[in-house]
Image (cartoon, rainbow over all chains, first blue to last red; front, top):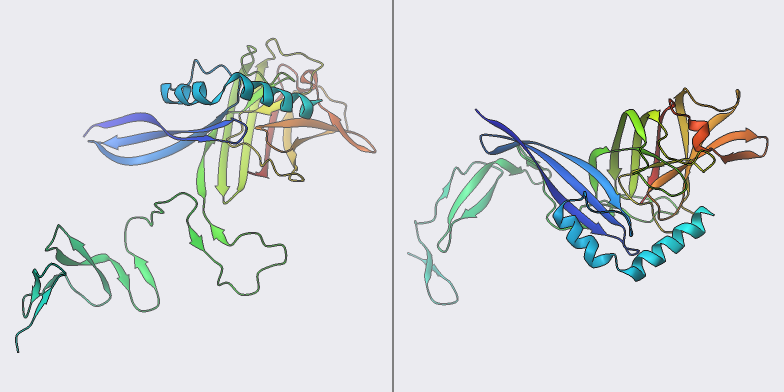
Length: 82
Length: 224
């Protein structure tokens, strides 16, 4: 019997202002058959450093987080945080 | 009289005396297996007695986002009701971070430990959090303190602000008698920390107020 653990990105939800909700699944398998799955969530905002993100998230971020989107998001944050 | 069912192409599908359903027992739902002609099988773990549909083992899987369980036949919906569709359920973890006004998680903050859990039912997210600091790193002490890393971004709809009550704190640098609270408003994924320090209400809690060895434990909920 072999227990293995792997992670996979199961959700990349892009919101209207460019924020990306990311869900990472941790999957436990026994002899290749899934016996457990748990979720971890985080949000990637426009302009954030995505170098530590999964490659698939980086692909989405690079496509969505244009200079215009980042500028609009940062302006909205500045207005809210003031 | 012998009989035969034909499909639209004139192919014989079922002949008299030839139709059998494997594992057929009262109330079992019958499913087809294989290509044309398919074999039929009574599912031991899926039954319908005319009133209740029972899944003996396994789960009910909603195959399309935005679909779920529709409760619209419930009697007398409450005034202000906006939905009777349960279209999301999820539970998991998130990683709390202490942020200053720049909302940057990479300021060399040090943590003894952090733990965050969430439960999402429909658009509502219930969260729990424990964050224990060992260092403020390069955070600006006079800045508004925030808890970042929330699992979902809050709804962008106006007037959907939510407040958080903090049940436990330790090592903080606030004035005796004051208490800590939190605020989340539209379209963000962090909580602004507040201190109830005036008769008129709460004001900003600073990073210095949290302190380098501060511990905050709280739970709350917000709308996505």
